[in-house]
Length: 511
Ligand SMILES: N[C@@H](CCC(=O)OP(=O)(O)O)C(=O)O
Image (tube, rainbow, N blue to C red; front, side, top):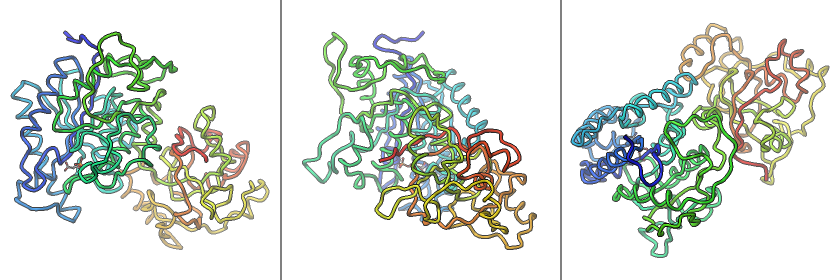
C-alpha cells in the first residue's frame, strides 16, 4: 500500500558525485554520507516514491583498492581503475541497502547504448520494470568501454538523461556545496546562494562556475548547469543540494508539495508517466507562490531549477541530448527564424540549407549550425562566404563538382576540418571496411556510402543552434541544398519526405 499523505508519489533521480562517495585524498569511502543516502532512499521508497541512484566513484574506489595517489592520465589507466572500482562500489551499495532489505540493480550505460532508438527504448523498459519491482537501479557510466564519441563525459549529464528517460519528477544533484552561488562560497564571504533559477542562460551571466569541483570528479558547477538545462527541458525539476544532508530531500519535496504555485495549463504530451506522478499541469513556476492555507514550511538550503512548462517530447529530447551527432547541416538565418517558431514543427526544408559538414546516413542525428558574420552576428551566406542564392535546377549540373572528394567514414562524427580524403581513387572496399569498423556508432551501412563535397568552412565561424534527425544522407542533402522541395524527387530520384531534417530542437534562438 502506498503510504502517501502529503503530496503524491514521485519518480526521483538522485546523483552522487565522487567527492561525496570517497575521501579526496585517502579515497576511503565516506561511509556516513553513503549510509545517510541509503536511509534517505529507503525512507523515500517507504513513502511510495520510485528512486534511481546515479553513483559516480568507480575510479575513486579503484584508486583506493590499488593504493594509488591520483587518477592516471591515460584513458586505458582510467578504464582499468573503473573496472577495478565498479565491482567494489556496487558491492558497497548492495551491502548498505541490504542492511535495510532494499534490493538494488546495477545499470551501466554509454551514450552508444542508447543512441539507437530501439536500444534506448529497451533501456527505458528495463528501468520501468526495475522500478515497478521496487528495486533501486544504481546507474554509472560504463567507463571501461567508453571512448570519447560514446561518452556522456560526466555523471551530471548522465543523471539528467536518465531523468529524462524515465520522466522523473525530480533530479537531485548532491554535491559538496548546498546550492549554486554567485561566486565560490569557500573563498568569497559575499557569495550569495541562488534559491530559484527560472532561466539557466540568464543565470550563467551571474554566477561563477569555474571555481568549484574536486580533483577526483569530472564535473563541477558548469556540468550541473548543463544537466539542469537537459533535465528541466524534459520537465524535470532539478535541485542542487549538499550531500552532507541527503535527508533534506524529504523536506524539499514536502516544501514544493505544500508551496505549489498556481497551475499552468499545458497541452497533453505523448509522455507516458512511469509513476502516479502529479498532473503535468502542476508545474512549479516560482517557489515563492503559496496556494496552501497550511503553515509555511522551512525551506532546506538548496537551489531549485524550475521545469519547463511544456516538456520537450521524448523523441526530441532523445534526439537533442542522447544521440551523438554525426555531422552538421548549415542553415541560413531565415530557416533559423522559422525553426525557432513552434509552428515549424522542427522540420527543415532544403531551401534553408547552405551546406553540409561531415558524412552521415539518413536517420542519424545532425547538428543544426549557422554561420557567424565577421562582426559576430549571423548572415544568410553560403558556406564559402558568398551571398546565398538558391541555385536553379538547370544550374545544378554545372555547380556540382564532377569528381567529388571521397571522405573516409571514420569522420562520421567530425567536422570537415578533420575529414581525411580516403584515397583519390578510393576503392569502395576500403570504404566498406571503414564503414563496417564504425557501424556500432551509427546506422551507416555499406549502402549508405556517401560522397561528400569538401566545404571550406572555418569551424570557429559556426554556431550550433540545435539538433535534429536527418531524413536524407549528407550527399543527398548537399545535392538539394537551397532547392524548393518540389525538386527533391527530380534530383534524388525519390522523395520520402519534403523535409531534409526533422525533429529539430532549436536551443539557441536568433538574436
Ligand atoms: N564514471 C566515473 C565518474 C565520472 C563523474 O562524472 O564523476 P563526478 O564528477 O564525480 O560525478 C566514476 O565512476 O568514477
